[in-house]
Length: 508
Image 1 (cartoon, rainbow, N blue to C red):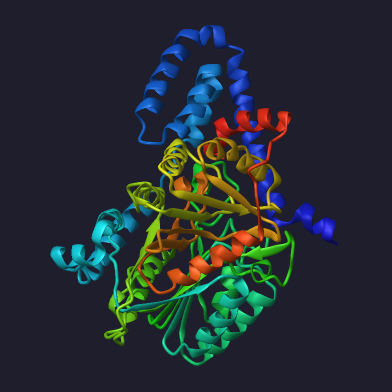
Image 2: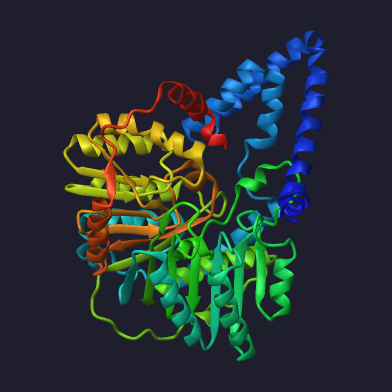
């Protein structure tokens, strides 16, 4: 039965359809190539035009190089593949939806902006980081917000269930992966009860992220239960660059008063009910207070676009008053994604700003370490000016070849003083930065090309909030369970293979 399911399941059938299309496209290219001599001059002109286009494209240098190599080595094939796959943009309809919804949501952010002088007094040298995020995303920094840090998925899960049970008005959930099992089944049982009690429940999940775990009509299944469910970017068996644009966010909001954001999806491995890769370590934040407003607006923007462009009255979901809380730093939830929803590589720039302003230390966890030159140079420069730069990656990988590419990035970083650690108990999925006891980021954003270039992502930028102490304690405990990889040497054949692959990694 299991073999039959794998052979004829949704993933296999969709994959087969795409392979057939790709074979068809390449067959046409090969057929045309037989007449290459006749078309030589035309192809030379065309490839030159395409190369000029690549060089002038607004994309990272690392993304340009593989296209240039392909077009120079095989002009016809390279040009066809470039035309099919190089764009990473939204459809015209989605662009119009995002523009309309972002325009509608902007006034809700502007209400929170502090006067310039007070803002700079409050944030000091980090005012520029807040200003950048605001100008790039519209999001603002919030006071009057308590932040709780969960160092493992189990702690997050238990508190999540408790907060869902308290819901009186609405529950919003946005996740890359939903996988039936103890975690999701217990959450779904609460959602069903809440719907029956008159609570509005919305669920947004990424169709490709969950394609191996959920049937194609699972959104309809949830809607029949009274849950407003939408699939993000429904996955279709068509060759298209649109499959790059995935919703990698992890957000839960309850009544606009409590919000969760971090790295954990809704599946049993994230809470160590199952152990496919040893102990799974993930981290999450709970926001209570005004900062939840930033998560509300992130969720409603994406949900409205995927629902067809219908724009909510945002005021229905934003509490009129938030209880006063002791002064506890600033919280700035932010999102990232492809154009035109976002017009810059926001997550990467947030990380770069932290690294470049670090004075004493920058500690990082990431499941994948596949860096472009900007990030690699920033980390090396920080270490060279005697900043304590440490990066923790998994010891037990979930994707072996991606793990090999991750390890291939160790050498240059280590040569410049960056310390690399691997989490010995298993797989660390947490994505977070901590800098100088003052600034941190926890969210869904990996240090790889998919997160930094293609996906919709989210995180919370933290400044002098109390939970930074808890994050630091967790890092200190983490280092004691890790192996310092200072003596690691990747073997010869794997070095060659990774170097060849690294050229084309930005396209994967």
